[in-house]
Image: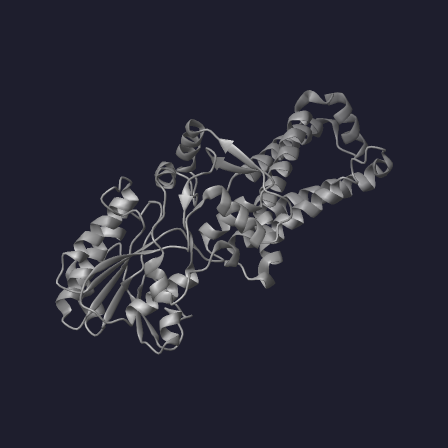
Length: 414
């Protein structure tokens, strides 16, 4: 959209929600693919346009987002409305590499259904089939950056699966060229990088491009175990591994780069060129934070849960009562304080294991640690001088909570 506006095109953007950030030259129109499944729903949108580009898609289904609706029903209604509008001379469908006669997954089959629908209409049509698209700041790019930066990179099998990633900026330039092109015939065009490479080589090259030091080390995971992990991954919100994704990866994702070379007037970017050198260090740090922060989260959860379990009786209860007595706790309150605090510790640890990132949890944990620290400082100050440092260790613990509070959301949203 921004590239077309910069080329002095007027762009009408059907979208679910009004966006205040559209640049001059772009106009929003409220229209939801979930409900716009009839030709009449699209007539107003296509009435005065010359070219239609369908860029709507999802990688996984979820509540309220189904492949059949978003990939087939709504696009087919859009295509039919555009074909009958009279003024529309070209429809560009952003499909996916692999949406062909060999397609087996619901993702590919739903894309292919819309492609076939478009090609059956009396209008010039271009089916754009991108391979894996890399774009800094994208969710999938963040996942691959994280994987490439890990000290031990897990791979399905030996990581020989063939992919051909294309940079989003090259894809955008190619799409703009198609929008501005003239012609009559319909066609399918693969949008891929300059050459195929194995998944393990993609990770190696991406790691180098981010400036991550050290030779990559890989952990081959047998196919049966990957299948189990994929079934589990399907249940995780925002995950990229599920049985269909694994099936598409095993099939391979490559094609000739000649069409995109023609549209660009040059070779598409290779993986070492994906990340500008000026941003490499920052992206390397960012990518490592995506797995280091979960490690920190897990360690903090372990401390809370282990502390709660120990307090329930692993550590002598009478010794715990003796410490509570020194804080001035009445005898009748000691069981409530001891077991209540233990239960609270376990709950805080369990909440830390929940995948949703939430800042209030880290703030609550820090507040409780500070409370414990203040009480012990006032009532049992000699603990500061204990050779095992039971209170001094609160300082790095608080620092870890602060890091999670400040950086966890930013690590995934930037």
